[in-house]
Length: 153
Image (cartoon, rainbow, N blue to C red):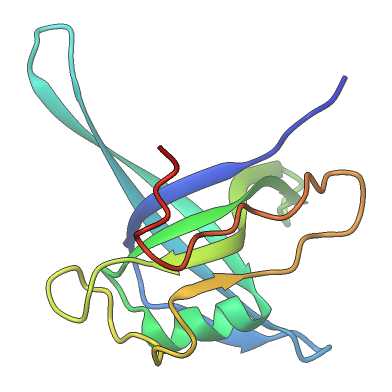
C-alpha cells in the first residue's frame, strides 16, 4: 500500500530560534509552533484550542529562521511527520512526534504580526529545502505565477 506523509501548519513561534551547527557544518534549528483552532463545543459555545508542535529546520532554512524570526512570528511550515524514540537513563522508552520542515514561508509584516524582519526583495520570503532522494518524492511543488494577471478562469 502506498503512503503519504505531508503536513502544512500555520502558526506562531513559541520561542526564539536557536541556531546550531552539526559536526558536518550543516545548520539546524528547532522551533516551537503554536497552532490555534477555534470550534464550537457541544453547548454551541466557541472554544479556542492550541496545539504545540516541535519543528526542525535544516540548512539555509535554519539560518533564515534564526536571522529573521523571533518569538511570536507568524510562519507557514510544510514538511513531514517524524517519530523520535529514545530510552531514558532509568530504562523507560519515550517517543515524540515532530515535524521536519521542508518548506518555510514567513507571514505577516515588520509590524503587527510579529514577523520580524524580512529578507531583501531579491531573495523573496519563501525558502525551500531540496526534495529528499528516494521513493517518496512526488515531484516538485507547483510553480507560482509571477503576477496577478494569470487568473486560470
